[in-house]
Length: 244
Image 1: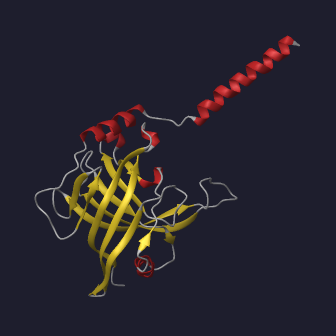
Image 2 (image 1 turned 90 degrees about the horizontal axis):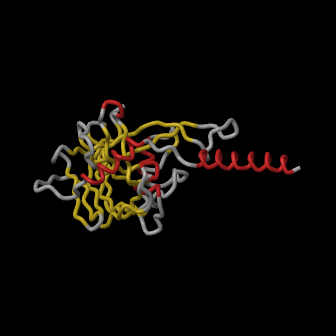
Image 3 (image 1 turned 135 degrees about the horizontal axis):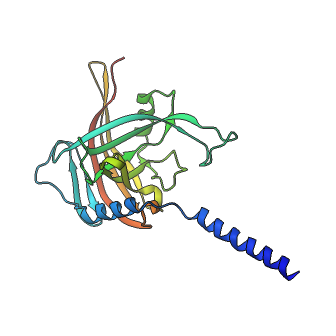
């Protein structure tokens, strides 16, 4: 009987060990070290030159600015397609379906290794929905909530991003994001919006407020609050739809 109990105990210990290994997320040492080096090298400031379109805010109490056409930064609006599910789990009972996502960024073109930039993701919308109709519905609402979890597709997401351009890892970005922590005091507010039609194209001129908290992604070895974005203002004009 003692021998049988010992066998059961050994199986239980092995099970616990396997369970612990499964629950621990895989962490690549290169990514951990790269993320830390990116954080160590980050300099938040404002350039001497300015331009008409920009994002500026206090980030961790430091005045931070990204100006269109200055220091390699460029205003960029895009619509992308992706597949999503009702819940995080993918199965035959929870099929994926296509949606579209709009993003507004002030990024480097071309990208620069470790250079930080602001990236704002709009709520997902139905694949068949007209982009202009969707944006009109978004801009008609003054205040919007900010995403704090991946399972909140109807909210805005704010990130500081840094890109790794080394050959083996080219294109991997390191996000410091709202979706990794609490956003109870965060919001997106559209202060001014104007739809402009020029030569059959549809443009928007917007001014939006951004207030949020940014968190580390645990996959890269750090957890919890990285910092706060306060008094954020994004002024932009972008092409939403080409002439059909």
